[in-house]
Image (tube, rainbow, N blue to C red; front, side, top):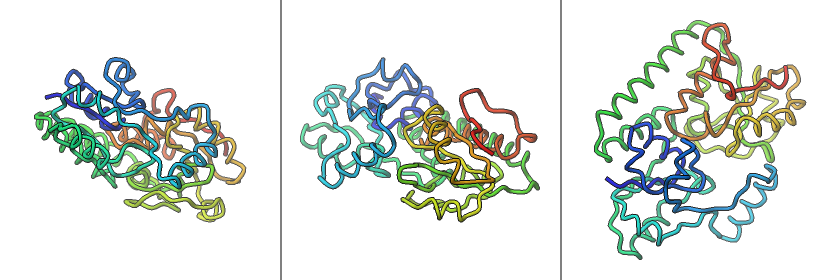
Length: 295
């Protein structure tokens, strides 16, 4: 089966299922594994925001949305030339990836008969279910079941390690300029790691909030996990917002690697957060995962 992934988390799922050789197309943001973007045809492009501040990125996104302009460009001809059997896309967030209706319209125009699978998880359990769905549609259900079982075993190990311990109050900052609180599956990661998410929206979209609301939730720990940034960028932003939370521990997390992409590495995120909240109960995460910046 020839697979095309139109979002980074789906690319990670495909590789975790051992289907990397079947993947023929990816997006310009698919960087895990690092070889994916170099070895595959890039069928979705977009603006490189790596040199922009969070405020500049937010302004750009709002300008594009107001103008009803696309944030992503589908290279339809390249996609059709790959003759895919299954395309993995989403409708969860128009800021994060190309919506599925854009893909379906392009396929209709090109006369391409690929199957389109839309992945829209809102909780950690939903994310695990999407792995099973991808595995089933790609013809490897047994691999998917084994992978999900192994992920659930790791979650159970964390749960057992933190059971009965006090649960710190945890505020998650998904964006800093302006501030956005945590939504979708992110609060579930905190709960699974032995914390109590505050000022969060479990199973709902992340929304813009205020620093007063976040600080008013009286968090013991603040996790800065900006979408689109790995640990270095998250740490820089965490240091900037730390003075808003006097008395709280402020930590940066590799947001793209461990928190915001709905794929198998969310379990790595649970383990990393557990190491922040209960460092004497769980192993220290790999270098480059987390950094304490204040408190």
